[in-house]
Amino acid sequence: RVRVRGVSIYRPIIYGNTAVVLTPKEREVLPTPDHTHRWTVAVRSAASAPDSENVGGADDLSYFIKRVTFKLHDTYANPNRNVDKAPFEVSETGWGEFEVQIRINFVAESGEKAITFYHHLKLHPWTQIINGEPEQPPPLEIAAKIGPVHSWQYDEVVFNDPFQTFLNILTAH
Ligand code: SLL
Image (cartoon, rainbow, N blue to C red; front, side, top):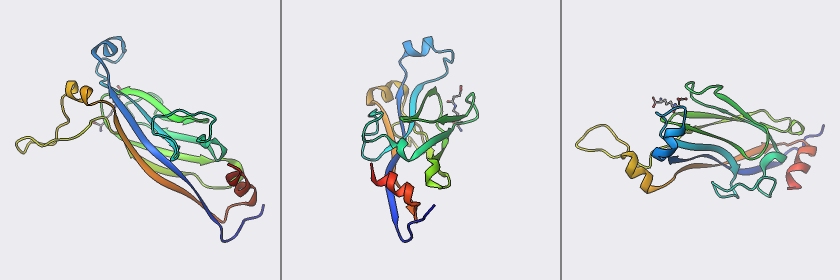
């Protein structure tokens, strides 16, 4: 296996979440009536819109990502969610914000170590301070009218001195 010395190649990604307020009807049919939101946390190509689903298309990251593990809050059953194909995302319902650990494993040909990002799952559209009280999210009825919450972070995955075979894979896409 030959490394190509002096070469740096990067792939732009976004990671983050969208969230919507559940309607009273949706909450009725859930086994967990205390859940207030439905959310999706994901890793996507920076070339695709945050909420688009172009599986197998130009923005499918699986040519260089083998697995993404989303570590959810311990209140969730099986908090470690492995996703082995695009779209690299997890959808759930819940009531609270928390830190999601996002671990990205690259394809075997890369010889690269996994990398980890942290994302604060965002459910509420804003915080406001009323009369010096602690920050409060708006009431759910108002949040529902405001619409989906998006929270995305741009980043670049950099590969230094990549293996020739991996460089070939990257540049072929
Ligand atoms: C908080 N530190 O206290 C956060 C924890 C946990 C969120 C939020 C679902 C749990 C379930 C859920 O929304 N957990 O499966 O019912 O705000």
